[in-house]
Length: 295
Image 1 (cartoon, rainbow, N blue to C red):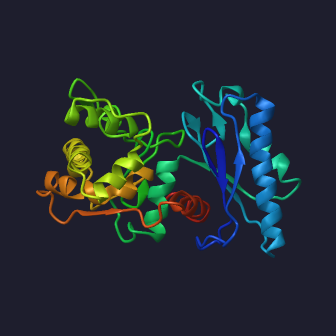
Image 2: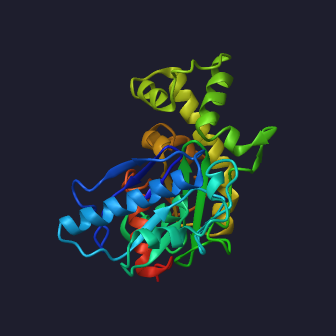
């Protein structure tokens, strides 16, 4: 399950990380709702998934859940106050297990960027690299890193190393490399704030058509990212840099700028995640199998 602010996306995956055709579902969830409303959405998604797995003849082996933070991914307890405030300090593991109605399987929580990186290291474009990192571009700027085959986490399971709050150009990096970063950069390039209907996906479409402004925006954002992660890549001896998140579907328009900023790091492999839609799901499965270590 991948829990967002308005929907829970779920799917059934085999133990080797293959998504069952037709198993993807969405359940509405209101991040500003009451405790009962939020918990009902979570348990509804779990019950639907378990029922569907059994319908297809599968024996459920575990429940994996990506949750936004701040969240204690080890204990399954939320610390959020800006959204999902009604479930702050509630042990969600107990809520989920009650919905399982006696089915004794593990319930695992993960940070979405950590799980994306772990999934890619186990079964995607990060295979074979002990030291890897992943930049996730979306509403915010996510970052996860692995050293010697282990995803680096805080004691509560969040990414150990962050880049979103790196000081940059009078603000922070997320001001220039995220959804709002693209809007800000568009305004820097054109002198005009983009219209409300101008999404980052639309910028990507324009870039694909050769629009000079859109291409320049992507180039600049790619350069911002490359400049700011260069020292961390050197410090942690990163061998593989991956890009995930919805905005990275347009990574080809940033790629040259990123590579130019990092060209003096020998042997660094740069790529996107292998599966934008299901990278986090794969990571959740691998978490249950390997506990965040690929070695």
